[in-house]
Amino acid sequence: MIVARTSRLTLRWLTADDAAFVLALVNDPDWLRYIGDRGIHNLEDALAYIDNGPRAMYQRLGFGLFAVTLNRGGQPIGMCGLIQRDTLPGVDIGYALLPQYRGQGHALEAAQACVTLAREQFGLRRLLAIASPDNAPSARLLGKLGLHFEQLLELVPGSDPVALFAGDI
Image (cartoon, rainbow, N blue to C red; front, side, top):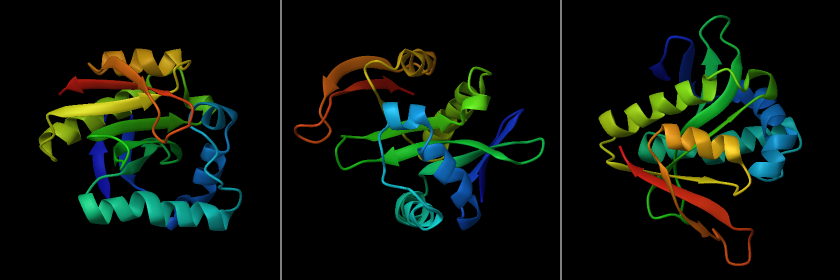
């Protein structure tokens, strides 16, 4: 299901056909550094992640992490979407791209589309985001979305702190 289109990108629900792409993305060294190891090490794990994460959230809330694909060719280049975590007091935006598609404005374009979805389709007025404290490119992108650093927090007691960003949309 397509949820948004921009001049260069399409955001759509993840499907079982995306398992190989998800496996590559979540094992990218930057994903592992900034987001963490999700224990996805084969196609079966990737399928379970898609079903139990994004697809379950689509069914429950109508949103989740979406596949970001190029309009030309249709290949997936990343994920971007809205997430309701038990550990945060509101919906947050998340994104990640394969290395070869970074630095070209794709993440900002996809994230702006998600902010529009959050506001116009889901009626959200405030959005959160979390980022590794040392992930300066992510902090810059969140600033362009109108989100501002609020505090460092531990999502789970004893875990490494993350930077919490928030803003009215």
